[in-house]
Length: 172
Image 1 (cartoon, rainbow, N blue to C red):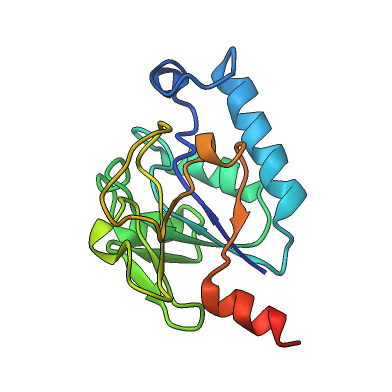
Image 2: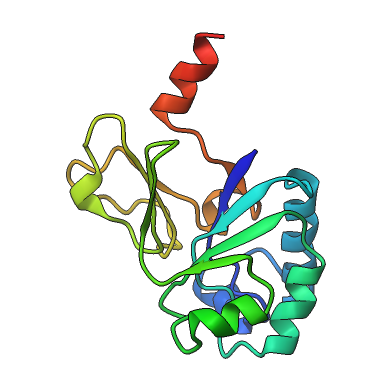
């Protein structure tokens, strides 16, 4: 399976307040996100991480977190991940790292950190994104953009499902 996941902001006390996360401490938040992730993602799965892993990340902290999480991890860097290079993030434990949105041709999905409203109503293409931690944002013609910030997904990854994938499943 292929999953998407965005904006965990591990070790951030600030994100608990700013995004109104239901945690009393960073330890509780980190442990909940790791537990939820591992209940869904299995060793053979791929999970696209759509950015904002942690503020001021140290390689040791990133390795410790990623070492506890299943699957192959592909990072699309977010605004809070740009202070380290792609090479740094790979050395910290990601299997693949991208500094720009990518197009998954097999599934007809654009994977990005920030929403790309210009693709919001292109038939057959879905833009999975993070970055926006609140409910109720809206862009005109944005119906094919799916916000997968952890606040929107119950603090867990979600399957990458697109119209093409649904069509393939329905023809079986």
